[in-house]
Image 1 (cartoon, rainbow, N blue to C red):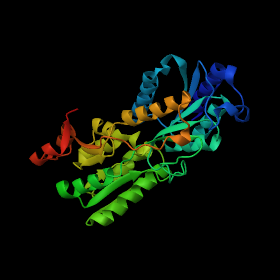
Image 2: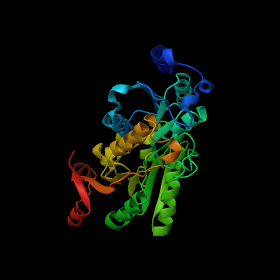
Image 3: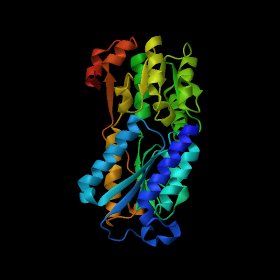
Image 4: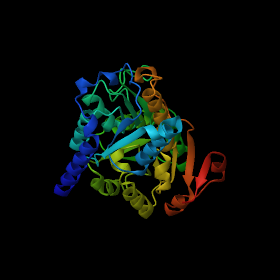
Length: 338
């Protein structure tokens, strides 16, 4: 922990030096209010990410590519900070980005977006990797997000129903293991939705295991062995950052493991109804470019759902978990073999 804080302070100090020429208080930057940005030759985008894992990293890659494709490649510089799962660091990062006087904040996760919005009502914020922006009190509604914030979500209304239906009808699953961080609003909303849809489908039961840190994930997965027919991992940042821990238990115990996004399938999940995080990051980048160019205000850009929902099955993972592939799945899914 001591080493972590030394590293974090060094990062903050370095970022402060780089941006000291434009640093000021929020109250001194009226040009960054909801009214839009003044014409500038260079823009600074502050990036805040709650933790490092492939899905969030892919979203950031998509965001940067969209900015570059918009014609702003040579007109944008980034200051990137990662909270490494620490709530206190997450809050500090948001406040630092405001004090650095960045032109726009890209918030990559629900906690990141919440901290950013708590720190500024003037600087434009574009989020992604957020599951329930209304429930997280980030936006007033999907169509009318609010004064200085908008973005893209990492949930599709059909994803959970389709996943649970597949589990019940194709895998004969009755008891579903849910591992999640109860401290993440994003995760609580998904788990509540999973249980609601289970009640509607009938014949399925949620068996929950809550974690506080990524170090708890393996033990939580092991605690469900013998109680469940399959694991279903929602887009929980804490669990996804330690996803291989769940994969290891699922393979050892021959328990099907389904996820909520494709990056986890690449990392060893059996299947997922999902989308590419790169795509939702790219869509967020397109929104950010419009804001920076002065073409749109955040309040004029509705929150966007992910596109191209589909089922992907990992053949190698299926074999490791003892799942026999059915011929009828050929017409339902795309296969990967990594």
